[in-house]
Image (tube, rainbow, N blue to C red; front, side, top):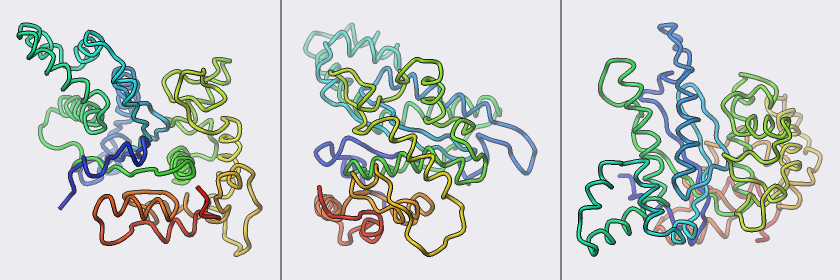
Length: 319
């Protein structure tokens, strides 16, 4: 039986999470349906636009995303401190953009009840489940209206995966951004439609610096912002290096060392292997062995999921 999301998400362990949602029966409800020939590619733009809107309302930042024909990936950062710093009126203003009538009715309540409502809304505005609910439910309703049908659009509740350290964050982001290349849809980052890396590269090409809709890298962020703890140029170089190796015939020889991976204690061969076999190696959490040990104990797991994958991915056990 699935565990409650509250047991799977712990900001004490990490603020970074990889979320995945799949269309019901894995049908191509967001792409070109091979059976009917109908195209639903426009729904990917719905997802991108909705995700961008929600990131401006919630205290949840988008690090990376990849929108495919029958599923999507999102790497998210939860910023609870930002939500706690908002005034009551700011919380109400943001929540109004999601549930206008709810806020309108609540404004008629006595002060004590109003404050309790605002406290509840504040908590929801940094909650991963509420972010994904407002994303998935909106797309499902819109798609069902377009298809003139009812019922499930997504196969079930979204999957969440804790990214327990910087190496895990980098690996997951690379996996998400390289999804179209790994699937054989394209061979270039610039042509990887509906991915965060393409959006970032387009912003850089337009001399806009960091993409405002995505969490910036450390060299793009202002001093007061959270940021992805790596240089953007290093990340792009790593993606290009990995893209050239994904799908290549394995030679059996170890791959040449990559400077970015070396800094994070990641093994080059293990990294490329993980990008190609990510879903097989990791399920509920990604990180170094000792971090998986600690998180497994916190969740009360009898087994330590992803230990073998961590041993293949990480070159050292350093923090």
